[in-house]
Amino acid sequence: MAHHPRSIVPSRRTPLSGSQRTLATAQLVSAIGDGAYYTSSALYFTRIVGLSPTRLGLGLAVAWAIGSVAGVPLGHLADRRGPRGTAAALALVTSVVVASFLVVDDFLPFLVAACLYATAQSGLSAARQALVGGLVPEGERTAALARLQATLNAGLAVGAALGGVALTVGTRTAFLAAFTLTALGFLATGLILLRLPAVLPAVPAVEARPANGAPGRGRGRGQGRDGGFAVLADRRYALVTLVNTVLLLRMPLLSLVIPLWIADRAPQLGWLGSALFVLNTVGVTLFQVRTARAVTGLQSAARAVRQAGAVLLASCAVFALSAAPVPVWAMAALLVGGAVLQVLGEMKQSAGSWQIAFDLAPADRLGQYQGFFGTGVAVARTAGPLLLTTLLLDGGGPGWLVLGVLFLAAGCAMGPAVRHAERDRSSWLAPAPAATMPAPLTPTG
Image (cartoon, rainbow, N blue to C red; front, side, top):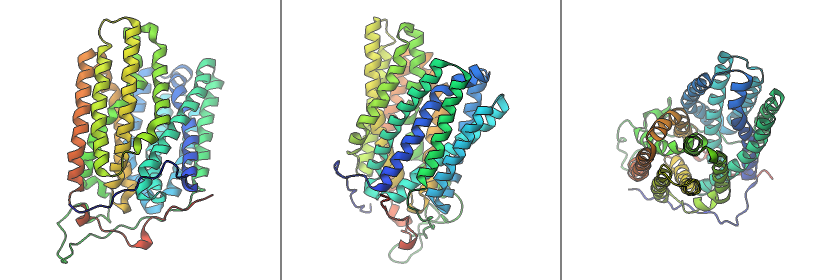
């Protein structure tokens, strides 16, 4: 296997560059808006607009299914037109779409707006990842993404508190104020992103040839990459993405499954669902950067994901114990213990997956590759609720154990999948000419 230089772990004392501070500011502002939206939107559309929960769920499932498909072409657009302008434009589109929610009064307009929202969000995520790839040196990307994730969670907490005010007041005006905050947040995000230095659009790399001048190894990731969406033909990267998607099924647990689990088994602990969500948010805000320091390359990233699978299994086992006939205080303790293990597994899985997603993507295709990798989030949001409510709420303790084993299997499978994707990477990935590589990190301050 070809030798790859060791990534350099930035010191915890290294100050953030101007570009990274700007990225963090944009992340914080958009996350505050997101927090307000996610907290208040379900009740707004059901109580104020009058949609049934079934139609709301159907609309969101359709929207995120479409959004999962949009990530690759919009990521490709970021590669070809430049990630800064694409990310800023998609943030502005999101602002306009959220503003349109203010006048939605029926299912069909809601469905159209929701599809546009999910599409813009998926594209924004891919473009923002490509922007990080262009502005942050290779050895510092995982640490930078950890800081952005911590910032995201801090913003979500603030936004959720503001959305909670709208829920408490409960009037149409209060809900519209929360939506207005979200729209203004994404408007500000787009303007902030435009303050970043431009990243030159990528020019497709040519197919690599062995040193002896012989033809390449045949059609694969290198050959023909300058036409169309190469990531769709990259089966090795697709396998890695699939494994990561299985681990992302953890996403609906705290936001949906645990509150329903508590309501079914201990209604007097209904407040604990929100408390566990806050615990998760605070944990990621405080410890994600520290957790990511152990990830310095593909080997350590695969190890972090394997550890995440084991920790998530332990978390599911603790949650399974809460299905037993135990006192209320014991059930509360088990739920808190399971949530603590879950946030630890989440942070390890996130740090490892960031490194893997970037290191296995061609430098000239970061946008579309990140867009494809990000489809796992949309799939987890679309299929996760139905799958997990059936498995866990109907299956009880054994269902939790089945889910835990699935997490462990996915965590253990990531290492072989990464090694398979990395195999002979240098033989098909030719570096683009220096003039066409993304612009280096340039401080804005």
